[in-house]
Length: 356
Image 1 (tube, one colour):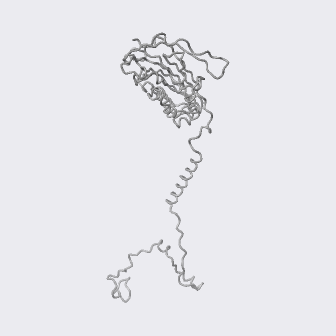
Image 2: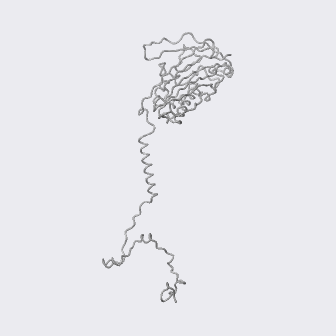
Image 3: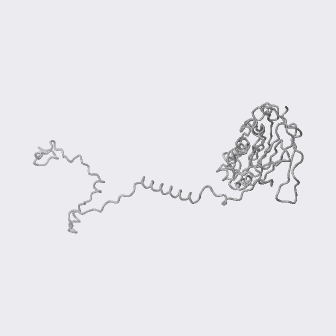
């Protein structure tokens, strides 16, 4: 007797044994049924409308998957951002910014009281001078401990101090700059608003308190002197302070001591020391901090041994070992003239010279 699932006549010949349906493994789930292109009308529909047994279903609308939609949105946002950044370029031109204050500079030659002391041993000169305890090179320009201000973060204060240090190192310690050749290394650290003044200072230097190369950097007349020791001694301080909600200022006060000898002389020639005291005031707005640039607004320089009778505007022309200052001084200054600054000259104390 057949089972409940067997046909009355039994299993047809040729069919798989055991009453198993060869299509039993095929599963017609709901998604398969919905995706069918043909659909059978119900009995009620066939009676009412005399319609054929089946009808063709319209194709399913397949929308974008969620992942594809998110990807499209991300691409659109990135494209829009690129267009926005292209229109609003982050590196604003100098014309779009507020005017930058020009550098005010003073260079005071210091005249020795007698002959400049010297010896062939530069190290001996340093050891027997006030610079004996100075650091060498950039080590003499240390960064102070920094604190955030009301409107500037710790990192912004550090950036201002670091940029000021970079300017000082490049403008007073780089041998290529000191010998009167390189200026670009200093120029790239300046705010774009000061570049015209900087370029004019080197193209047409003048003693007007605005356009002296020696106000921007330390440079010796290469026809007169060269470095006897490239390891310049330095000592000084850096201080940062907030002047308003959009401005940081850094004040630098450093003394640099150079060992010099006559240009073209051999290593056995006598060397002498040359001292430069620089007080620099830097100003930084937020664009300067972002671009690692500075506005140099005040430069006060005392340098010697020099002669007041010689112009120290374009180069420093040091008095070397055994030399004395020339007679006379700078030409008279007309206090009614607005085109030039009053000439100043100082005296180099004997205690500032090495004891030979």
